[in-house]
Image (cartoon, rainbow, N blue to C red):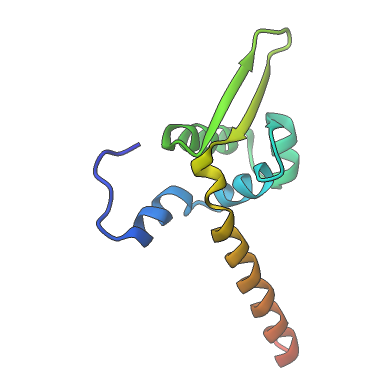
Length: 111
């Protein structure tokens, strides 16, 4: 992770989770440890390359850990760190806001 973090705390948070896939990865790992294939299915229409890049970035940032088992075929599991789990209230707030926004749009007939 970069040593020079932005002065603004909101910008720091966005720097860590601004990618669409990172938020969805965190959402899915809040339920517990998952293997790569499970994440690929649960996150949605993400390529293997993009998912791998995001997981590596999140590991580097200290949001998750990666455990490789010395098996054939190789088994890799991803788990949120304490820092990763600390984003749960942020995701819950995003979920509440998105739900409210959708309801307002439906009531207004804009959906």
